[in-house]
Length: 303
Image (tube, rainbow, N blue to C red; front, side, top):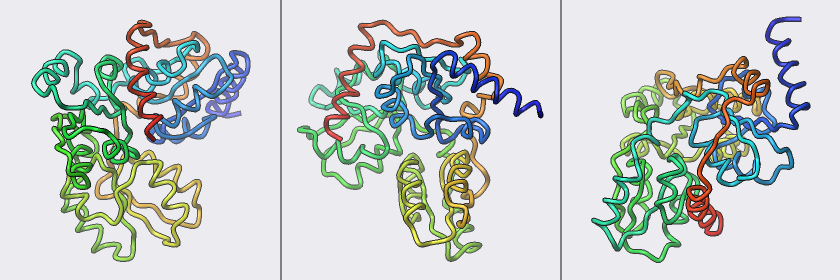
């Protein structure tokens, strides 16, 4: 038995003993994806956590995702295998600055991407994902939208609405790396390929794409498309799942491979220790969770 197969067996045994559910984000390492009970995007996984029976959730992702799972499942134990797995974009928005922005724009409705901290969600009117942001903004009875923390997703939504979008200056450092030059090179090198990019990309990249989709949207699109070759403009972790689910198709990274360092921190050893020692439990004040849950539940009601 190899060392890897041994640790996988130990993880599966501990999972059964602890009555745990392993949730894994699409950007995680391939070996972590392969051991998942559920694989998906952050909100999709949090909803799985809320609907599932197991009392222990191990969330292989970054901190805001585990927080969201805890907010939607306050009675369950939520573990984050790597305590240092954060999200730089989520860290670009804080509750104190948001309160000042709300005071400066009293007529604006605060729309917050789920890629945000629990404290920021608690100050928000409604949360959104990259898949439903436009749909929810269109449904809101508001002329002004304070949109945070991603300026690129805000710009994407602005393309399709007459409402005034006031963007927060945050961004995803991974998607910010994609450039129009890479798109033009990919078009020349693979003229028949379909180019899919994430709405966290810069506007000039979105302008040149065939489709702009969330990770769940990309997975659905490639599954249903008759095309055989795809160029993917998002974090490279999703390519593993795409190839596994579509063995007859070819998936290429857009330009140089773009990697989220935080998403790749979680290793099998970290997952094993999380189950063995209950590391690291997400603990949030009840009042904070109650306030943040309002924005999340409002999103679910709109979507």
